Length: 555
Image (cartoon, rainbow, N blue to C red; front, side, top):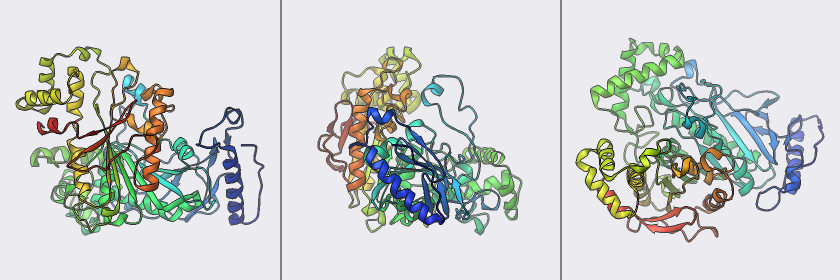
């Protein structure tokens, strides 16, 4: 892209339209087919920012981002008001409109969470190097990557939901979350967002004060508000509000499962992709309401004193709520939800109380879904080479500690039969990464009419002497065309890039049509509980039919 002169016009709308059309044309001319960049382009100026560059209009006011390698980039656009003070525990509210042009060039604050220990000096920090900057309650911000502004083109939209359970994380936590490459490669609009988490986002005080009837779900309602922003504003960023795919990994996958099940996302969500995070139900409202009362008791407050909890410093409140949850779980036996005490509540109003997708008349009936997990979510030997020499007896001990001594032999025998020739450490990874939860989610969704597709990722990075295996989070950078960005996960280069091309092509096809079939992969059949068709993603991709069905029975 050549240098762009700084031009000023009277009338913000005229300037916005003119800038969007001209820069979109320049970007289109400078990007070769397929979304790549030529060597000559790599020698040109890469970054553009200025008064009349990358200015877009939202319903609340104009924002200025920048152009990086021909992709318009906006960071930290408000989609909701601050959630501090009297807004804490309350549903999200719209941001106040602003005058002039608001800078949108850096990430918004991460939602309140405990980040101590994120940067301890060990191999996990090297591999994942989490990105955290400001943390605070003015966190309802989103980010957009797009090839063009307001050019009338209806591009598919991908909304990325970060991992971290329902307790931690942000929209830029991993470098692999970056939307630039997939936006360029697929000519799509990529959106990511922050929302309330943990006790700030999911403390249920409905039994304490009717004013807080929705407090147990405000964190997921934030995401709904973000999707409404996308619906109302994404055309100004070159996107199609009638073609929105939500995608997330780990806790983000669980968010996808929840949002698809919510009736109020009708018209906001058209496809869903859940990676290594699969749930088929929410927290029981009796548990969450009881925990809300217990938090108030732990604080030494009465029902009429909720304002004191709203004004408490967020760090102090999170520690209070976590302490209360620990005591409450010891007394009551826990939430029954693997992601802890704080997450979406089955209130029967926002979030279903029954099993997700049970109603074929619900809006979710028409939403295709794609599920994927990895075959070694927990790579225990990455930093402990001695585990590679694990014996069968040691494997039985490990499985016994984690799954119960009475189940250990049956589990090991079942997985050994299903996957002959695997080393004990490899069998341990498969057992700890058992697909029972993703199969339950796929089976639940398959009762509805929209198609379901299932994948299993098994690529092993050439790092740590080959001991990383297909660990939790690894597949993210493959789906999003970031294998040369998240080098500490993939090593970079042509080998991971080749698989990433295939997976990105499948994702883009799914976004456009609700079907992941593409020329890059073998035919990908729909998933059914009877057949269990599963796309195995590796250097060579193939389809298997429920390859671990018999092994799972031992669980």
